[in-house]
Length: 405
Picture 1: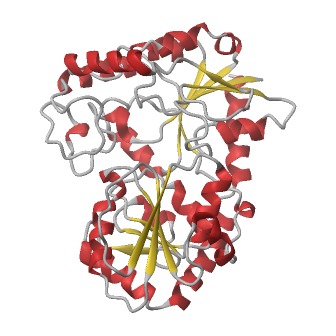
Picture 2: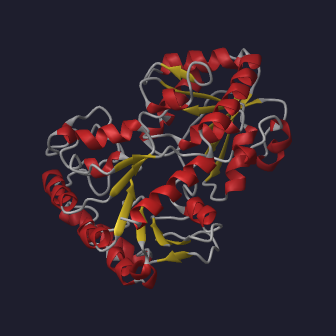
Picture 3: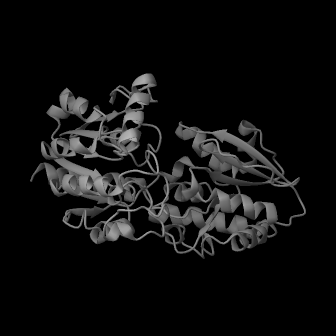
């Protein structure tokens, strides 16, 4: 069975974007899987790269969309994929993240309808005119017209033609009906509530899974030299990613905490201005980590992993941190509260409350035995609940069912 995985990148988010799935299923004789991406970082021969419109071409394309107040309409990447031998020979095409200025919405009908198709929907971007996470805005349930700008992470300028983009998505989505994969019931509920996607009824829930055996949860001190971290100080980890990741709340909370001993904050992800957090908090910014081993080493350095996201559709890094024996702190009323098995394993502060977040972090810092106990329980919970083999097995079964349709 030939399967083509389609995603904007290979190593960024490799656990959930089809890259790891490809590698695992290719170990089985019945599968021949390739991946096509725009941004290739690996040396894997099974990963194909299409044009990324780098340099002047990307700038012109982006400027054209900005001037027309639209997004995801003018890129020609979808047409390139249609011409690939690997696409034409595929029995099944499995789509993942198609935004990030990757594929034109106008190419969706041809890409989806010419093949038996699966689409893993990772976030609510397809349900809105332009933002990835609508947050408190409820217009996505009826009609996105004048944007209140309450959501997070938009493409193009703020004066995007929202009603036009809504109509584009409505018409495009009405013309396709692929099998849909979601990682949790929360994302399924969003799809069922949206007027754009309520016709998509072939929905399969497959939770993400990780190989907990790759993570060593009780050797944190030994891992810290790699990133220049102190061996004798408590370390808090965080991953940036814009407003949605909640860094603005974390930094304010850390400025307010009262602690006796110095601690360290180690941050991965895009460059984000953190500022001065006080004379007892040393900040390390590592940038993006693309290799799995580097991410694992980073998490194994941390005692606490802060994930005060305003919204997630799953939150894979939470279970990665738990596998590494971290005590994870998040906001309540988000999917992370359930994913981290709070309050038994994770800790959930009041939603968007700097003071509550500050109090919970401060309390844990002053109770190191609690941190260790939560880390131990978290590891056990991940081993029992989020098995990577289950994730692979369920996808293999779905592929076989669709292949035989």
